[in-house]
Length: 245
Picture 1 (cartoon, rainbow, N blue to C red):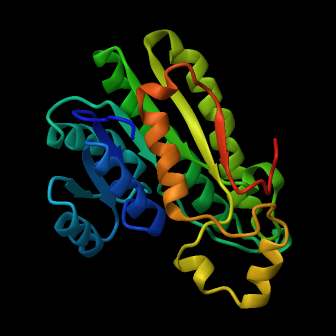
Picture 2 (spheres, rainbow, N blue to C red):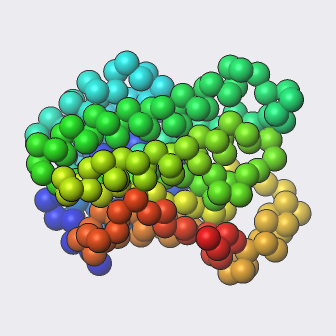
């Protein structure tokens, strides 16, 4: 197990299935965690389950308040920021010719622009520490494309390219910026799929199964730890072999 004892880490989108698992694994590794999300009741459940974590309700679509959020979150963690996990995101699916500008902009603004602003504000804190880690959660469809998701796939592909540029800019400052690209993971969303659709997806996965949220969480812990010191500007694919870059 990677040792993250004393590391101050912010996790956005903490109340979902993958977010929950990330919190659990970081907690097991000894990290000092601030969990963020839009639903305070779900954050309260996390707080009751993991007593040592801090919680802070925030909607990352509020782009003009992101710097203030990072400031408040860092204060709650004790004044320093070692890592941020940009896990929050949304979908607004539609076929391209039916997709409204509002549907396009909502997904791009939340998934890509807000992730940039979160990273930018976090980097300012990390520069003071002369070290830091940023882990951006993207998606397999950011590499492959997907029907009905031109906005979502564009946002996730954009996160990958953005992360590479940020990694180049701040590598010499001892700040590592990487992505994790999940494949199809067991979540509340995939649970709602009809069996025939699940079977169609699984048939394309060499490992012949959906991933578990903890598969993503384990990758997060690795990229936050000293075991990944020489990994920067990379995308770690966690998809059971569905996409082999």
